Image 1 (cartoon, rainbow, N blue to C red):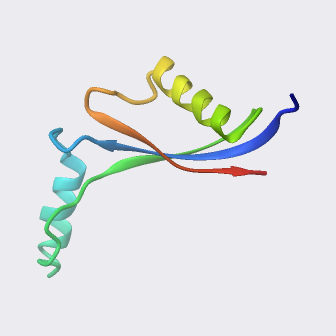
Image 2 (image 1 turned 90 degrees about the vertical axis):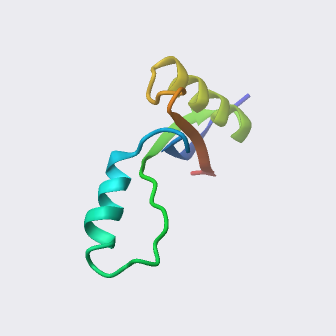
Length: 89
């Protein structure tokens, strides 16, 4: 089967129970001090955009998920991996 190039967008977010010092600092030091008291919660994360060749959209998702787990690109104990989108080039 021929391979197609895909762009996979991924977010890595801290799990709800995990401490998030970046988000805590943003909420405490930036939002609250600048008058944005209506913000009740902030969570930080990472965004990755990966181009790869795959046989299908499903295969692209499988490759990226395996790669992220095998290479420890994220910590599954404290973070969630979310595939935001998969687009054909």
